[in-house]
Image 1 (tube, one colour):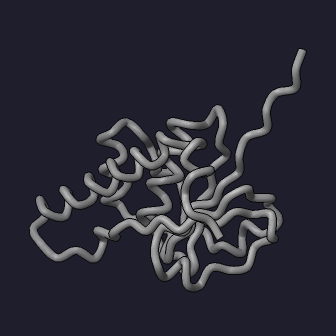
Image 2 (tube, rainbow, N blue to C red; image 1 turned 90 degrees about the horizontal axis):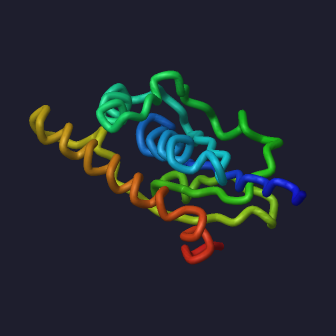
Amino acid sequence: MSEPKEKIKLLFLCTGNACRSQIAEGWARHLKSDCLEAFSAGISPAFVNQTAVEVMAEAGVNISAQRPKHVNELIGIDFDYVITLCDNAYENCPTFPPNVRHIHKPFYDPAFMPGTNQEIMAAFRNLRDQLKDFVQKMPEILQTESTE
């Protein structure tokens, strides 16, 4: 009998660990828990955005128990990949060991979008769907994305 394959450990990193990284972690846990062990963190964590929680619930994914974490809380985890989801996290990403592959895949943050409630909800749903598409292509896409 063969040994079970070890899951790929990946960290979704953004500025506040409020929206993008929380949604990405939620999708990875929901869609890819058989092959991915997902974490999320921020450079300057704040709070989990309640609109992100709401739009994920609409899609059948509960992220309400997730909490914001500073990237330093996850020191000691041997990540295979760090995926920065915004330019600020990319520019301020801490140094990880050389064996950790870094992917930069920026996504728009709807939390700062002006507009009506309908427009803001539409932007959050769009982000949710974009991140779902990105995560659904894992782990294969991890090999093809540009890395440092």
